[in-house]
Image 1 (cartoon, rainbow, N blue to C red):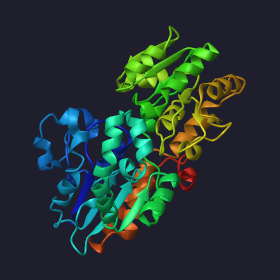
Image 2 (cartoon, rainbow, N blue to C red):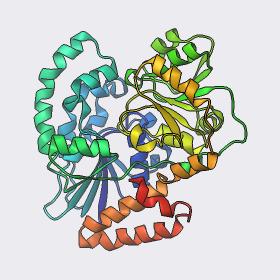
Image 3 (tube, helix red, strand yellow):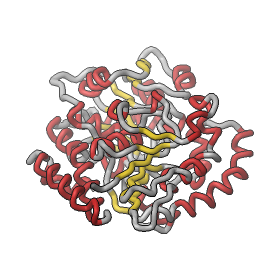
Image 4 (cartoon, one colour):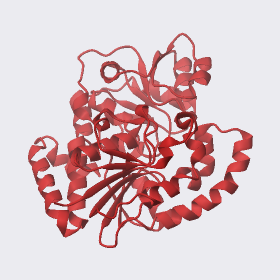
Length: 391
């Protein structure tokens, strides 16, 4: 029987990368999941019973508050995982997991969410995190060594999978490596469409400065529209000060509440620039369109005039104008749902298994390809013809 190991950077908060790790575990439920640290709030539900193996960093003090402060320790943690017994290593990485070591005849495939942002897009990263002047001044000298390590670590995987064409371009530019594109998984079956539409727009996001939720708030104030914000994060206090009585913050909500509001919103507002961005497709799965900034991964997932509209200037006036133009258009729920199905979890699993089967050692290639064939038989006739379009 082949030996497969999964590796993820860390489980410290829930996001798209963690949903990818959960989907990887669904495909390989008996494979151990190696990670530097794992906090309960960062674990997807599907991983609560997984065989998760953490590094000694798990015992560091105040980990929940200070996990970012320990950034120089993560390279040592991943390099000290003993993966010598595994034939195939599948890592999920936006930072460190790609640096794990393997034995000579093993194959390592890295699903890269983006090259290490805090090293290669420093100005963008500190703006995203809202760091003050002192941290901005001190970090570059500390990151110099991490940049050298990251370049060395980028040579460890045999193959790269990128979550978008944008990220594949970055991998090529920074690491000099080619990447095959497989978009991340959307849990389409989690969402149901509704017959009625409410009189509100929706934001579904962690509340971080780089998400530019401030633009959604200012645009709705300018256009006199109601806005519901689902999510929490360090930017919430600032955003609440910008809001008026038309803006409501609901905080983090369970899936059932998220699904209810997603299925009844006029549209999702997506004002930030993301490497991929799963929320637009999730709202499409609920039968509702998107108003997105024309940048980042959104240009690969939003079909203008079919699943949503774009605004071109990242300011509140441009977004407010897009809202008014949007309201003169008609939308077919079935088209929105069908579009999201191209990115369904089963489609993701099929594409990953198919790719791994083509590059894995002979000891596990048959197992992977058999899994891909079984999945292909389960894909609905409605999804299958669109499969080639999803990447």
